[in-house]
Length: 95
Image (tube, rainbow, N blue to C red; front, top):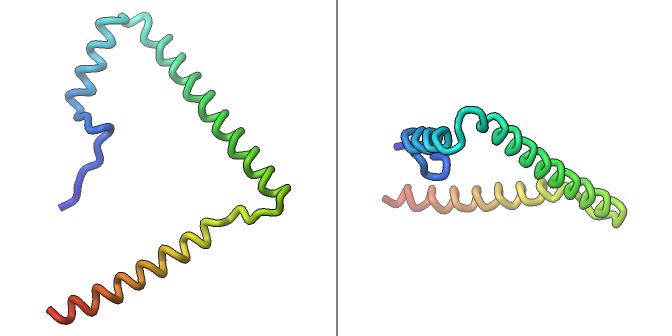
């Protein structure tokens, strides 16, 4: 059984109802302006996040720190997976 991902645990009908309420409250003329404003706000947040990331990267490079810690983390995760599979395999064989 596979679970379906939900957007904030809201179904399609609930999203439709929310959009209908927004249309009633703000009217069809204001919705494009609201969407533009939301888009600009999201873009500003993304730009700020990218600026912060680049500043952290620059500072780490100046300090001589290793920026690619994901390789080490991936190795650790793979080692743990192997250990769990090894343990699980022995338990499965006993049953």
